Length: 340
Image (cartoon, rainbow, N blue to C red; front, side, top):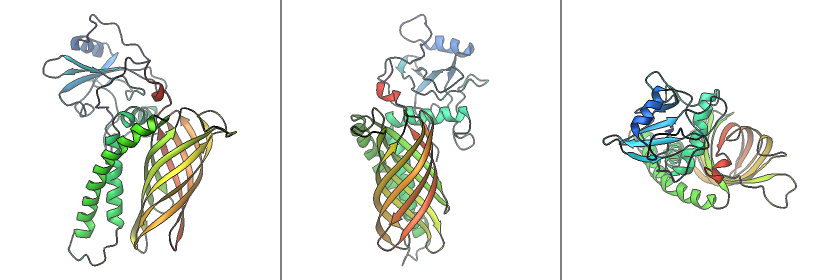
């Protein structure tokens, strides 16, 4: 699943942490930013990276080469050249400038963002630090589509003799409906949880039984739970999984989960985690399930965890255990503070 790496919402922020170069006019002028592109200090959005800014040409500040710093961004109307918006990023996705002056950002299937290079991690940090808080409908739609299609694939096909109905039509319909629900529901949850110090999370896991797990949710990042001697942070989320099984062909689960992350030190390094969940399982039949997760993780950057989780899912008659190796993205704590 590919995510667009640009925020589409007009920003209400004041300025980026890295100061914008002083230009001739208080109102940004496009020619000044073209000059900065030629100087190698800024870069120009390509057609691909600017897809979420229709009708605009945007320019991004090239941040320092080390770490995952914030950076500025300005946009102009493609037809008139007039300034339209300034939208600084908490985590810049830019790793430099290409030969044609466009921004070096990993995008799409042939050049996906990944956690194995700083270039890839910057794009992932931008995804969770800027796009997910500002455009949760995009994240909700993708997650909903995956959940709906997974349920449709695993749904029992008893009595469905029409070619393509069970294998194509039902997963497509469920994917569309679930995607629209996700696009409407996740923004509402994001608004509510943000008021209480929660920030968005996303996760992708691979299981020991040829399974794939996708999750979205929220983690409390402003302060740990009170009256607990070890730093403990509340987590909320939704998980959707799809696995290949011998008997039913495929199985899928969708669960809501509540848990904690227990960090001996500050928000970084090693931590323990646990959660309980409830939801639906689809395979040989459709049934309600509950789950218990226990695991260990390491927060490699302010926005990225690597976790090993043991999940035990219990239904009316069965109990299954799966081990998940999970990459989890968490919006950086500075998102709560806003740009200064």
